[in-house]
Image 1: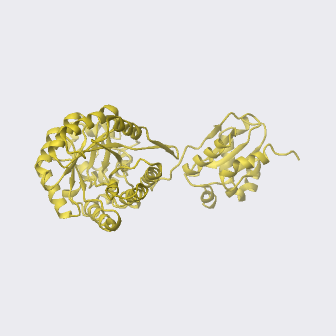
Image 2: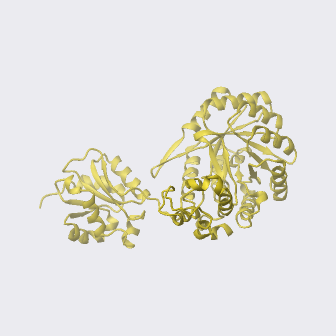
Length: 469
């Protein structure tokens, strides 16, 4: 991809080169490096946004802008951004803007049922390695094809959530009724087709909203509609090539992959927009609910992997949503940076001078697992979190990121001796081979703990306090 090969010097030549440090970097070259790595934005350079640097700003933006346009749905703090991808595959750089997930409601639900479902979507939270994983949008579907019913449903949804809205109908009159009920909310219109693109395009322009384009299993038509609508003046589009589970999953993957390749590898600006997948289609097959849920779950994961930037789902079951949001979080972690927590001395419960001292690494998944197991054991203790550059225990030991010297330094830096009256530290079982070195370097007695943190409760109940010799 051409944009990936941009060097910091290409950007530096266009910067003001004042080394003013207003961007919080030591010099303009350091800022240029941050820009190339997408760790800073152009607006972080105050001189660059001045009128006299207008041309330079434009040239830098043209160099850095992603081949896929970034689209915003909604307004305010809960607005979601989708697209803006720079690369086709995650290992090439990183993915941005985690795939937002919308849950549907329909205009044939009772008001009470609709409100209950909307509130449940808004309140959904799952804590995973220190992060709250959430759902992002409400998709209001017109199953009645009645403008008044749709308007009422949209009004109810808007009044009971701050989440962004997707308005779903192929009938422009119904969509306009929904738009009037959601004025100022910047919903996504779903969807323009070969039959209604003129009317839906006018609505998108009139209400300044993004517009989805639907051309099932016909990429030529999809491209033609996207080109026509952009020439018509609609700038924010989302493309839907169709979702076909089961026997059609190969075609679905193929279509999404070809679109993403054309966008990121060939930089085809006519289709340089985010892609939308519709896993809820599995519920239209008149199958048993459990079968539909299972198919929706795997369809959602397949779509995210290849390469949906927005999903509309139906099921609200935990075993459908939890694997989906966890997979999404893992997919959108930055492969250039291990997921790490702060290196520090953590106090768990109400420890005193006789409480145990345990040790772990700052790999986020390891840390939160150990912390959860200690808390579930209802143990008060101190936990030393050693900086291993975000690497797990066994790998850190093998790669010399967890060493006796580092453990000794952490004990001193965190003043552990001032917290307890003993000099005993419990290390993970997978770091057992370091026990002798740690004792020699730190002067502390080492107790080798269990191989897995789930064994901490039993270990402490049997081994702590240690028996006197």
